[in-house]
Image (cartoon, rainbow, N blue to C red; front, top):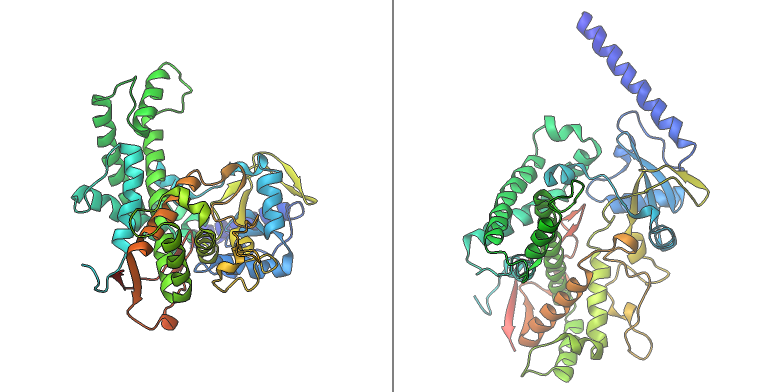
Length: 440
């Protein structure tokens, strides 16, 4: 009986503390839905489609509002004006890294139907491996296949509803079973692989002749050996390599997969791209980056693919680096900031019929490519994606090379192809599909 009394009193104290903490901060932060004790606003947010939930809340509370993800207040910025004002006009203040507990814990045959996932994953992964390790892998190499599998599995899991729960209640990471354990196990395995690569590089390192990113980092480590405050450590190198491979592989892969799916669903768009390829490049040489400026329709299609798929709907979490008065609201230092990229990429004022795939969104009346300040698939401001230039280059070269050499044939009627993401969490994961690559 005494134990029951203690438990009831403890729970009551936790509930009262939760209510006090939430109410004491609400008068200073932007408005938002009333949070429940401990749970916050979790029940009002669909973990399978966070972006849509935030859009619905913005209709009630405006473009700047507060939600409680568990006990933690998070300020949401919705719409181009609010996102731009924060990430560009106040870029320094909003450049802090938001909390992402699971990620933080981890970082301590031709002409027949095929699923393109594997091949579209190998190419971008090998690009990153060439930059980081100075070597590419054969597509049958066991170490390479294992590396790809673990990276892909981690990205899939990190987009699941369970991981959103773990990020909002970090205590679950240590004390509850679940798919987050797989993420941590995969990271430990990847860490061993990276340590092996680091050792190989150290044994053959030439301080005057760096071969790749890893060599450059190791040289800096050697130069900073006597600095107790140095950020150039083996652990930091492992985390950076993991980030480069994870972000640089899966995002480009998913965009390519989504791109081919959209091109199959819209054969009239594909035909116009191939017509432009024939006119500018022809069939007797490979595409190069110099071709891009002469291919406005293809450029518009690539932009529209990225706008339409909305790959990272709510961006990576940011945090404010100091107290700031933002639109007459006081946001304390360290507050997590969510920027809804969906609200910018699908803004109906800038992109008429935003839910429709239409390359015309990036073409002017004369058919020339038209830039848009609302195009933010790589985020914007101080924390814009470091690999934006590489990703743009890969998307152009890969897709134009494919369409130069193959017709895309769906195994079902194009009208029946479903482009709805199977997961819409950290990233929008495209559905699996099969297609035929028919040589032209």
